[in-house]
Amino acid sequence: MDRGMVGNVSQGRLRVEVRREGGSAVFTPKGELDFHTADLLRVPLERSLEEGVSRLVVDCSELAFCDSTGLNVLLGARLRAQAAGGGVHLAAMLPAVARVFEITGAGAVFTVHDTLQDALRE
Image (cartoon, rainbow, N blue to C red):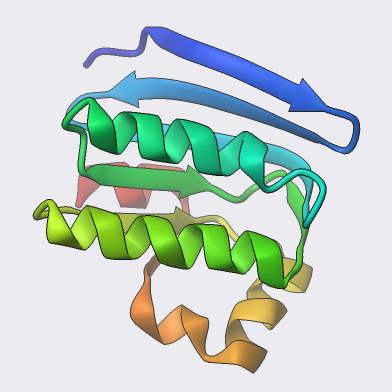
């Protein structure tokens, strides 16, 4: 498996690690995904799609907060990934973040996995 690090970006309350693993791009946002930090995730998601990687896995195990702007970033990436024949897989959501997806109904449009390993195996 290709586990080479592609990059890291950070700004105050959010740090995003990006790497390739097999045929997937894996994004690990750490901290708070909101109006002020959403571009830190949006830009690498879009870059991966531009580079031809349409299977995007977001490891949410260290994502403490996600507001509507963060949710919209993920929904937009989902639409672009599906148009390219792929999808966005969410893994290991903490309860506070999972609640946002439950309340909005957005959880029904994503493939959600209990663990990152499950998301990568599928």
